[in-house]
Image (cartoon, rainbow, N blue to C red):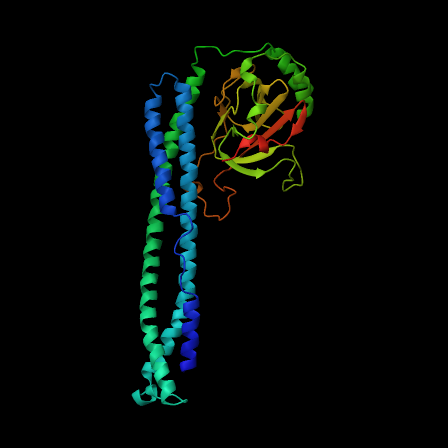
Length: 376
């Protein structure tokens, strides 16, 4: 009997909880994300009267997108922490049941037998001391279990509150996107353009059947000369990403179908804002082959940046854009409540349902875009 009790206690103490939450506290992360969303809401109100309304709305939308991504991550961490706690509770319940059963069997024995031990009085004393040691340990574990149950309740409340916050933020960011599209359409100052005509471009598009062929003909067309396009090469490693997202595949990586592409594929949220990562000329903006809507930027005379897979476009052929200028948005898919969060434990971003393809060419040759961007 005492041997069974000792074994049950050893098993239970070995499975006792050590860490209650993930390394990053989901509650603190959610609080920070909600604060960022509240700041974006304030910025949205101010953007309506800003002198540079386009720039203000662009920053507002990015603020919302960062806050939503952070809040989704906080909810995912909360779900993981809750699942880990529940798994530990299940394991601890099984181990504790063994201890309680052993104690109940001892309690059910007649008093003289309970005090006797096959190895004599000394062993009986040792067994009594062990039981005396178990009592406070079990009491401490009961407190720990109660704390974990309380944390489960807190994590569940956090997830519910976060989803409500995300639903409100999604409505507000859509308002900001609508305002930005209207502001782009109402621009009074025509942007600087280069000389390639729409008819010439249409003839190029109709004459090609590959991206390589299109770029070869496009590069033979006239381009603008502007000081704004200097410095792209010098900024290697510090160029901001054109859209918030998660890297799915790198340069020349094979996808599930075994096809490798000389560019990057990022997962993004529906309707995510796509901005110019650098000053440059829009050499093309529109549908191209099977790439969806494509924007081709020329940040330097020998550099070409291709962004494919967009939905709405805010720029047109020939515009000279500034760094951070809105180029367009990813396709919009109506998000349901279930789409707002993901409980998956990886970083692939299950809520990021759209993909953008990024390709960079130097002197007509594809190069790995990843080292050029700032991934912090």
